[in-house]
Structures are given as C-alpha cells and as structure tokens.
Image (cartoon, rainbow, N blue to C red; front, side):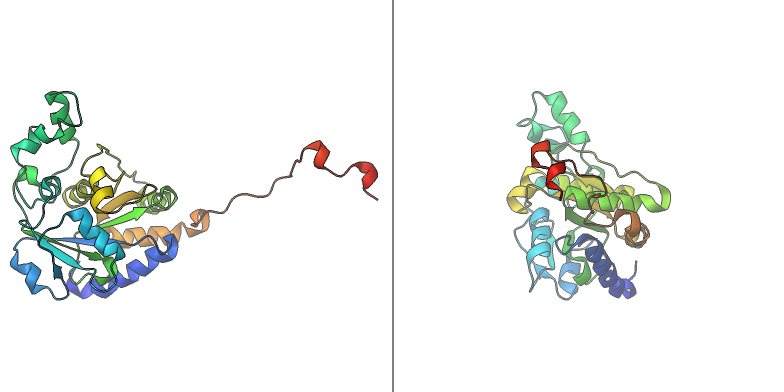
Length: 260
C-alpha cells in the first residue's frame, strides 16, 4: 500500500462503518524503523509516556488530535514493546518470570509466553509506532485493529470468509491481547480475534462487551468486498425471524364464544 492510496483508507473506513455502525472505529497501526520518522510525519502528536492500548484508545475517542506516535523509549509496557518489536524480548518475559503471578509454576509461565506473538522474540525490529483512526492516518498502516461487539465480530468473520472460506484464528492467553493481535497481523498476515486483556481494560478503557480483531492493512480491500458481497445474507444489525404463528396462554386468547 503506497501513500497515493491514503484517500482509499477513507473510503474503506466509510464502508466499514456503514456496515457495522459508528462505534466500530477502524484504527491504523504503523511501525517505523527509525524514531526520526515520528517527527517527520505531519499531524502526529508525539507521546512521551504511553502504551499501545492507550494509543488505540486515543485514536478511537479523540477528535482534535487522534493520531499519536511513540518511540520505543516512550512505550512503557514491556509486553507491548516486545510484541511490536520495539525491543528485543527480555528474558524476564521469554523465561516466563513476569507470568508467574498468573500461573502455578515456571513451566506454565514459559508455555503462556509461547502462546503470545511477539515480534521482539526475533530481535528489535522497529523504533516507534504511529496509531490513528484509519481514515486519518498520515502514512500507510501495517495493521488495522477494530474493537467490536460479538455480533459485529461475526459480521467481520463472515466477510473475511467470503473470498476463500478462511477461518479466523483465536489464540487467547489473556495477556497482551491487542499487541499480540497486531504482531500476528504483521508477522503472519492473519486475521485474529481476541478478548482484550486486563491492561487493555485499564489503559485502553475497553468495555466489557468488546472484542478486538486485527488484520493486515493489505487485506482491507478483501474485507470491504466481503462485507458488500455478504450484505444480503448477513446484514448488521441482524433482523430476528418473525414469521411464525404466535401461541398465547389459553386463558389469554379470545374464546370462540367471544368472537362475534
């Protein structure tokens, strides 16, 4: 996706919101290889102390300056920084030390880490990240994330299945949900669905009913075409089927003698 396609991002956003409703705000995520790029891109508000889920929350809710950028040094969550490849995954993560508060022993802690996707497991790859509403991204994003209700997530699954019948993957550890979703989109090109983690609820202000879905930005066209093609059979919000005979308690029905 090239810079000349940025107007297309606005069209994609409009299509997604048209099919899923105004609360389904698509958020773009761009990983940069040099920190100076954060200052070179116009319209990016630089944050000096943040976490990825906070940046996505800003993109979803801010109106005036929703596009933010942060360097590796400004990213204060070790899980998030490692997932996005802003740092090499430290041994206290890869060995499971930080997971011991959630599991019973070291073996379980290491296994829990292996269930997450961290670009930093292969070393530090990026120097910063830019996050903003998809239709206001000043640079082509690498990944897109959307917070959805289960019903809206179903609509997305159906749309992505349209072209090839591909299943959406769900690998859930309860940890680093948003950032693992982004990492899987970047590393594997996969569409993933997850339950937002505790950090996402604390710093991203995610609500109880919301799920998070992420996918590579180069699959936006596939998504929008799938949404359009399946609109007739899977229109959201879904309509209940009402064509059945109604049966009332006998005492509530008009009696034969009352039908004059």
